[in-house]
Amino acid sequence: MKQTAIMVAALSALTLGCASVNAKDPAPRDFQRIVDSAHARYKDLKDGKNADYIPILTETPSDLFGVVIVTRDGKVYSAGDVDYAFSIQSVSKPFTAALVMTEQGPGVLRDKIGVEPTGLAFNSKLALAVYENSQNPLVNAGAIAAVSLVKASSEQERWKKVQQNLSDFAGRQLGVLEKVYDSEYSTAFGNRGIANLLFNWGRLYSDPEEALRVYTRQCSVGVTAKDLGLMGATLANGGVNPLTKRRVMPAEHVPELLAVMATAGFYDESGEWMYTAGLPAKTGVGGGIVAVVPGRFAIAAFSPRLNEAGNSVRSLNAIRDIAGELGVGVFGANPK
Ligand code: GLU
Image (cartoon, rainbow, N blue to C red; front, side, top):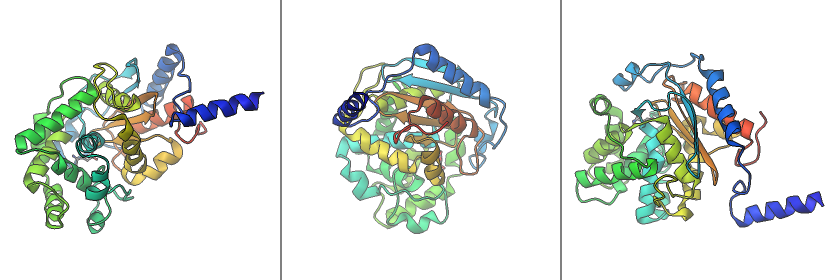
């Protein structure tokens, strides 16, 4: 009897194409307790250090730490500094990839950028050797290429579309932290080199300096941990923002985007992340991370100190613990 019930549940989950959509979320007080305890567990952890290759990022107070869960129906459970605005950095990348998919279909990502994990750091020098044929929209090369693919007849239009798309995912108007932009653009020698090489290889689809500027502005957009939670919850909700109820991307392309996040969202730690947390996610050197439990909710966190791979130490630990406690890994519950 019990076995039949399990089979029926499994079959109906498969029919919905999403194994976790049928699972029941915990009661609100349990969500809140789990967020509070993950925050308390890591709030004194001092491992890692702020990113410093973008000079201004060293000025973000290192002890900031916020953790948030946002459900597909827009309920927010948070602890700590979830309203502090920091630069989104690479967490912007899947959302601009979503814009390109929405405009031109998912084939364009596969054909004009690539969807293979590189297993390399976001700014790896070795990565240049593989950029010609192996990249994805979540490493810098692929992300600059994604910006260049946005349909636009001017730099202004390209930027406005990128900014509006990020805002639509967050459900509020987002702006640029101009000091971060100035600091990053004035030191963007590596990314400029990447953009020029891609252009030379026919893998960049606009003027290289324009793509570099818009990409750098995109990375300088100010967000809070709560914003990241809402952006992730929009993906968890099949592309509809839970607050504004606006459809931001077609539901049928969400699984493809989450697949790229699962294989490349943590750069050269993506394998380790999937092995231990089991959730599609994206990190940024500003200290933000968002993870998505498909069909259910997003878990986001922010804290500036990064490990060697460029991933926020407190954030990744908090999100991994929450995923473990709630048993929401996409391949099944990971052991706690
Ligand atoms: N804007 C950063 C860069 O291009 C993003 C890196 C990241 O967040 O991983 O280097």
